[in-house]
Amino acid sequence: MSTNVATIDDERTYEDIYAQGVIVDPEPGVDHNVRIREVKKSFGSFDVLTGLNLNFPDNAITTVLGPSGTGKSVLLKHIVGLLEPDSGLVEVFGQDLWRINDKDRQEIRKRMGILFQDGALFGSMNIYDNVAFPLRKHTHKREAEIRKIVMGHLDEVGLTKAISKFPGEVSGGMKKRAGFARALVLNPSVVMFDEPDSGLDPVRTSLLNDLILRMHAEHGGTYVLVTHDIRTARKVSDYVGVVWKGKLIHYGDTEEAFNSDMPFVRQFLSGDSVGPLGMD
Image (tube, rainbow, N blue to C red; front, side, top):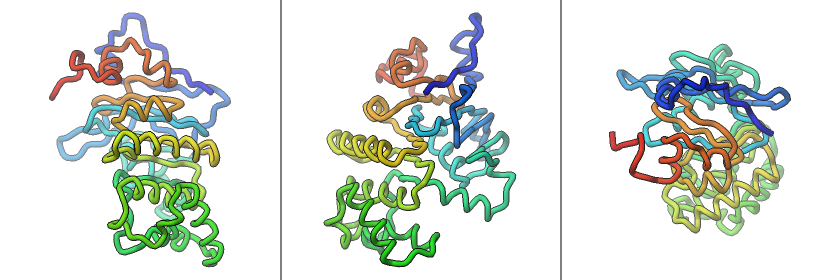
């Protein structure tokens, strides 16, 4: 599976790309459950997304990279329908999220799962009840069926022995795995990860990456991952999009991204102090 990036004129400099961004044109025959087109979002005088274009291929893991404050997490909130763009199109499952009513938007959300940075578990619920929560809230399944689904996903993430523990009693890595299990219980077509490796040591980050790859291989779906961790991006990604100053400036398969000649992409992925990205 591949996607074509809109052709860049030979005379167009990298500075022009940084200023204008690029548009990813989907290849015919490749499905995209999530499409973002010219999305802009500001908070007061702070422009976060400044014309972002990106389509996410189905049944693939796409990682969005970029410096802090460049709009990656805000992008996820737009996809899940928690933020409305100032302008532009957010299309999920063929529907513009902001041209449908609240009820229909809520139905679309049920087809998406999200793993937040800290797992976002309810502190007053044990691990089992946290994972069961979406099923109890959004379905009419009986408890016996809920238990079968929940225990199946907890087994996948290695938490069957921790079902009675509360979030305050488990490690950060266990919270992430519980959050991942909860994100999967409604069998979503789109799963989003907001800095899943945040706060984890390198070994547990690698183990979480293995889990993401294994779950995607087993369940399929469109996985959208936001991270700062370059090792995570290299390990799990089918495609990599690089965002700077609220625009997409590079998109391609993982090998292409890590072999890019674009100064910003090369600097960011190598962690070099010399390049367009500074402290400002």
